[in-house]
Length: 131
Image 1 (cartoon, rainbow, N blue to C red):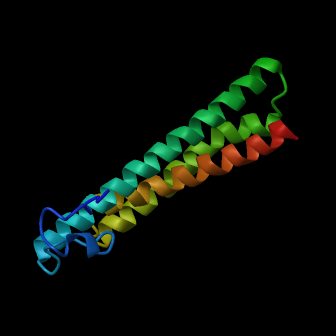
Image 2 (cartoon, rainbow, N blue to C red; image 1 turned 180 degrees about the vertical axis):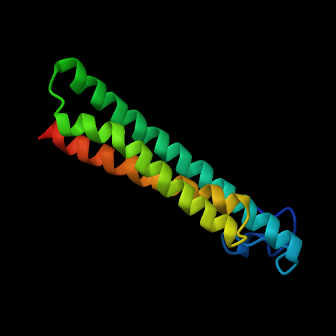
C-alpha cells in the first residue's frame, strides 16, 4: 500500500517556516500588524486565565462565607486588594502608553496586576481549603 505524503499547497517552503514567522517578514507595516495581533492574542489568553482564576476565588470565598469559616483577614483582603490592583494596573497602563508602545501593549500591561492577584488568590485559597 503506497500512501502519499501531504504536500504544501502554497509552495515548497511553507512547512519549514519556524513557528510565529510569516512570509512577508521585513515589511514594517506587516511586522507591526503581526506583533499587534500577537499582543492582543496574549491579552485574550491572559484574560481567559484570569477569568478561570477569579471564578475559583469566588467559589471558594462564597463557600467560606456560607459555611462561616472565612477569616476576618480574608474578608479585609477581599475588599482592599481591588483598589491595590486597580492602582497597579493604572500605573502599568499609563507607563506603556507614555512609552508609546501602543494600545495592545497597554492593555496587556494593565491586565498583568489583575492576573497576578487572581492567580495568587486562587493558589493561596486552594492550598488553604485542601489543608
